[in-house]
Length: 448
Image (cartoon, rainbow, N blue to C red; front, side):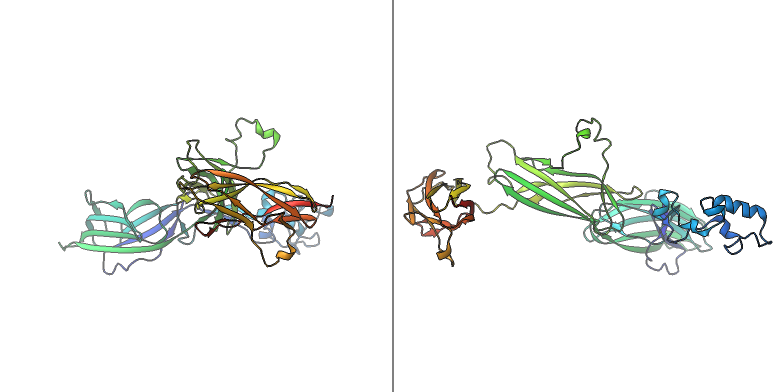
């Protein structure tokens, strides 16, 4: 069901015989009763003070009806407190069951279908002949022709008559739009063709925003998407699908299902749409992305991960559809030298030596080195809880291109509790280049 709504005023038709009237076709809304006390049919005839056995002016049949309708009241007497009772679940919603046609042009959102009912009226005493009608929508970048009767003009629109038509347009751009309606016609005894243009402006807003975060952990890439509802109505997300780029596969991560639903064959058919509340409601999605097993490394892969296809419906089923731009994987710049932890003890004994096994990887095609590995001193070096045991600098030989070397650092802990090994640094001697320190390593130091 659709309700017509007058559009924003266009250009004045002046002395023209014809004039356009534009109405937007939108679905009605539910009429909500905001009154605290609900109306009872008996209230139309009498009030609470009149319903009394002592009042001879009230017909007895009305008193009997009032008593039967208020049987829940004490003693069977009529009581206005019944207005506060919730007899039906719908009573708490305040919905009366009536539909309310829109009273304004309303908001138009990206991804919706703009549907308009256009009427061209002849308000003069002359007949309009050979009427050529055009309707188009202009955005900031494009122009879309919706109707053109040039090849088959309307033969005539009689005095006081009208010609009606409906146009539709899938809104795919944000910002200001203009619905341009024009008519070319003859009227009266004049042979000169008259030209009538009228303009109806509206603004297209963004219904939802999609905020994404990409996190890389070893060979896995995690994509988090937060969808926020910017409209004034609730949205029911029929589909939120991530379409990965060709070199990626995507798996949505969800909470564990109840045991009774795991083997339910038609659970996908009965799955309810995701509900996002109006005016800022959000819902989060999490995806695990992996590269295809083609020998390609993550560093060599294209930074494009993919894009989202999103469809939704409003309270009364009006559809909407959006496609996001490509989402990119912002990988950190590739390092020439990568220092990694191979093994590290989770628990050590206070003041007893232990070793941390490390690996230095040459990620270039040339031979580099030699290297010095040491712990940089900070402002609180005197209070360092874990330090090198023995030589304070470990010298490593040359490392060929795309090769690696393993080595051990001998260390000792001087304080108990959870401690951090921080500041392990690699220095390329010939290139005189110091690389970023290794990330902190947590260990537990016990007294014995």
